[in-house]
Image (cartoon, rainbow, N blue to C red; front, side):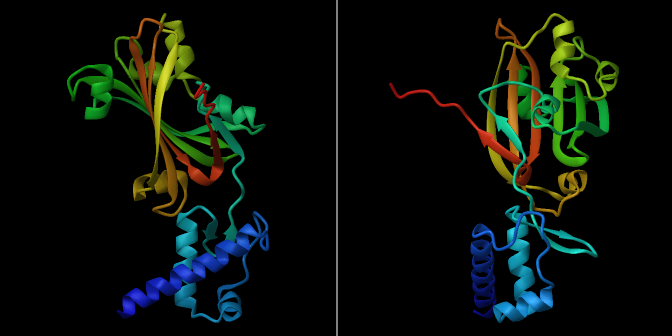
Length: 242
């Protein structure tokens, strides 16, 4: 019963702070008052306040900086239009930001089940895989993993790309991408992804699973991208119903 009451209190505190953030009482990028001061103003204990702040941090509204304080998260600056198929670097550059790549690794690995199913091959079949963390003005915003057939691009080809486009590399091999089918789902960052994105564990992510094909319908690329949710605004052009 006591535990339930504490959780309920944290939710109420979080909702109060959320309303103040929505009203613009604290501007994006600004630092919140110190925990003792904020707890006194709300009439709550510091432990309850910390629980509420952790909830809002998971939602991408606040960001705690060790040794500095708690800050209001910046509004999304990257717009991802899912009706258009283009690379992460191009998307970042289109927002007027400087795209970059860190923690790049290329290897030969067995295909996991979902990737194998997309290619129509047996799980465990060796594929070339490229893992990269993409940055916008130095901020880590996307962890991407790209899978392709080794006879098309081997790991050394992928490693040589640097910040380059896998789409361009496939086109040079005579496999230009005609269309892609993507699914997007919310997820909480496990510790491994949180470390790569330099955010707290269980931060909100948008996970994109995309299968790219040639004009003949041949699957040439399968990508899994984990987008930092508070950095992106996602839009989709929807036709119909007429």
